Length: 257
Image (cartoon, rainbow, N blue to C red):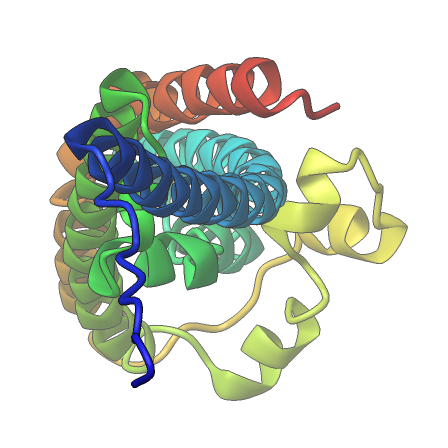
């Protein structure tokens, strides 16, 4: 008769199962850390890309804000010159001065904001890529200042459009055309125009009832002076300061030039 022997596998100790559990846990945890690190690297890369783009936008913004400020300063001076000329002059003489001042006092300039990056950051929630809360706060404040400037510029634009309506009843179209080459940009750049300079002392005809419409024009442009001075003295400098602070923070945090 055959005798069958039964082999019994040795029971594993509890420490073996604990070790297997620890190895599995460490493997999962290491994978989690690796994935988390990968996401962190990707988010930092995206943040740096946004930082580069925003830096370029802010550089363009500040350049255009300074241009707008110089523009409005000169327009403000032209409004003062127009008021002074009207108050002290015989409007039957040297009326070309009116064409000159009215052309410049009614000029329009609005800041051409570079908002593509800023809008994408705010509207899509990608502002979260910037982990510095102080930077995020300054970007939000700058966005608010942009909106305030847009409202002030719109108010000025409405006054100037009202002034344009009076101008059409005040000046003769053919002589308005003669001053079309006159611009604030050229004056800011220091470009002289000998033809315009010689024309300024001429006696040019005005339309009928010009005295009535001239008063209305002057009142319309005077109404915008408060907004102009608010932009030049407060809001434009505030936006430049905020943009500069953001640019410095972006350069420092993301090692940009």
